[in-house]
Length: 620
Image (tube, rainbow, N blue to C red; front, side):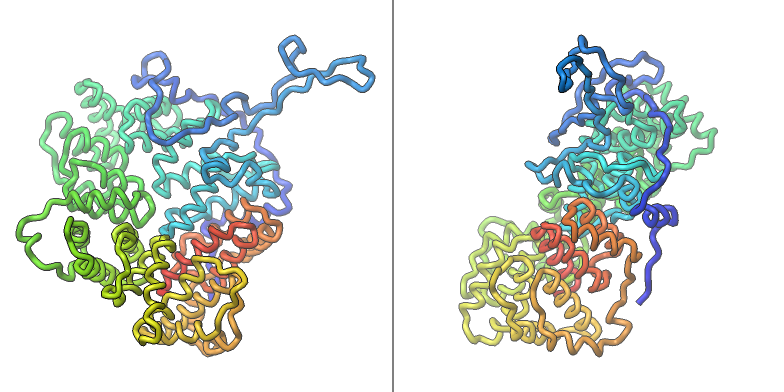
């Protein structure tokens, strides 16, 4: 078993110092840069408010907008401060309100999924600053992503204690939201930030998010405010876009020429800018490293973005590309699938893109083949939702699609989500019993345990039919993880039956799958009998623990936070311990510790959701 290094030396050093913090607090003044609502699109014009932003996401304004960061000086009683009488009632003292930290800003409260205002109770600022950069950049497992999103967006009192000298917490939260591709959340989050807190990196993120959302006013305002703040090249590039869309083509062309003279390297930027200036675009393959600005320019120029444009690694850009009508159908399909698997695109939008994909009459006439590409998957979905298609025909299409996706990859989980509504709408009639295992497992993978139960019931109704018994055994651990059965002991015979039912791969794969399943069940409070673990003791060393383990400091903080039922610390260190290692590669003992810690901290529902995701990722 090997130990993986912490991602950055600075983060590790800060984390090891954090528990007994005695670090100096930064005395750097807060930079009073103009807010997005006080900057014009034109960089040379006088500031004035811009129109309010539009969007479906409700913003909970930060209390920090009402009070500066510095501790306010005492104000006279005549100013309206609440007087506190002394015991002798002979004098009046003024008790000013304490300033509220900008780090309290968020979108989620207890009523809409937040973790509560005491999220960071017992966790120091230095600790959070050290651990937050270690969170997964773009978690594909929905339970993992949901935990990270709620951690980043909860309205909560700021962590106590001095800064650890790292990046400000506000900036760390914004950067993680961006890397996750949570653009709508990021846009709403930043609009709730106080004027004093806007720094150049935050303005850059706000501009990129606005460019992807088509919010030209905000993007141009933020770029204008960046002038002279160390981000002049980016500000000048965005100004080209702003000048073109503002009808100032001559000024835009002049700025573009200056950027060329400065040897700026962004072929896609210049191709799209030239197209807006009336010059025939060059090779569109340059868009394989698409940036938010490149995409905004290409949209404005109405360039038919090719399939190569979906080669960008950014989930946020991929999600925006998938929604770009000017992109080719294949580019939108590839981008949509990548973005959905990364969690940056909702499944409803992917279904819409699948259904809107044009197919030739020849394609529609051919029987569905083994095509595993995005176009083949779109055609399968298009076929499965046709009105009047019989249930038997539906399950044939869905069965082929799920089989082509495998049974443990992100593609399988995405395919399960795609067909979840169709599967939930089917009645598990006797003639469909042979499909029950496939349907139930896909529904469990999609987080639809409620819809999976009828299929399991249908299988159990078959009695001692061997095929049905084997299917029940194969599904049992997943259902047990998804749904708590308090007071019902774990039947040892069920574990033996499951292992026999799933002995369908090489021994090394089966050994890991069993280790993961038993670890997850034990983490959820089940008593896995010793005779079930015994065969795993002889597992080959290479397969007993093929993944790396996080630094012991992370695991120690995870255990301590869970024991204290400290939600913020538990979620923080659970996610940091998992890091960017996929659940299919995580060590079974790490999965046990993470799931058990979440449960111990009172997050049973989240623990079960993560356990199911991990089980599916490992072929359980």
